[in-house]
Length: 490
Image (cartoon, rainbow, N blue to C red; front, side, top):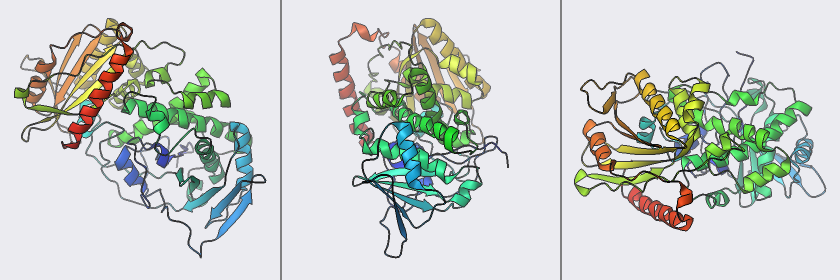
């Protein structure tokens, strides 16, 4: 077994990127399928594919009469109760250290639970993450019908009826990864403090109100600032109190395509930590950032730089005779663009360079009549024409690396089917700072949709428009998409 291991620490209920918390008894796979594994971080070797492990979340029911419970106190008023296990460390001491490192005090008791590792066979992860649907994953060249190992969270925190509960993988299983249960608990105590000080709520209403749209990009931003906060304290805890093998940099990894939702889910842990390192890492700075998060992953990736957002064209008005109905809209964001390129063979540096200059995007999902399958029209805007050209060239190079063909001389590019993904047809156009990528499994659908959207006006900077009018337009579009989505199948 390689000596370098990845510390996997999860905030499940609060940060499932699809916006849904696990139900009682839900396992790690259930959470992953529901939301793209956003709070379920997994235990993996740094140099190996993910190991086959089973469920990570335990039943959320209260302890039965025969469950042993031990109570310790971190001060005169806060009790820490351990249900069903007896740790070989003092949880109250761990909490006291975390309180000092984070600059926050626990306001009420916290209950600790322990669960066992469970083996499970490899399975096909659902191709969704955040607001990315399967056809969006196909567009991004992330979709895979291959199987990957189950992922086991090492710990997670939930809030139920104003009470905070922390679940920890048993010490014996954690020892296989050279990580102590005490270290996992230190990370999860940060999330407990976030809950108790209203920096975090299970529904994340306080985050959703900060954004016009609750998209993949905005969910990654909010996950990053919360997990980056916990990762910062975790590293401090390791430096001062624990000798587990640990490195924040190990979260900046690229997994196999079959595990792409897990791969993307790990990025907020690393980039959230990096953001605080560059933008300000004091406890007060971190609390202020959680209360007022960056507007996009572009701002998360480039703290201190002004990201000039470019107003996207209005939603395409596709004529009825094209037999295409829009049912979902998302913003992918710079971080996912970067990671998609990385997962398709780009180096870290080349992917970052190609994604740099992102100024906005909108991915529209369409249902087509009959059995011709769905399609997407992805509009991206860039800070300059040079940045737009660079992205378009990089995306085409990525498709070429996957076997793209356009032998008939048309504008349609075809990426043939592979063992793990169906074939996709693309039409890529650039107009100034706007790059449009239309994709569908059926060539005629991609071409029809691309043709219907060519007449859109070129974007202008947001500063040239009334922000109230822009917000009203976004709200109206979001409501319309929600209605269409309720009546369509993805």
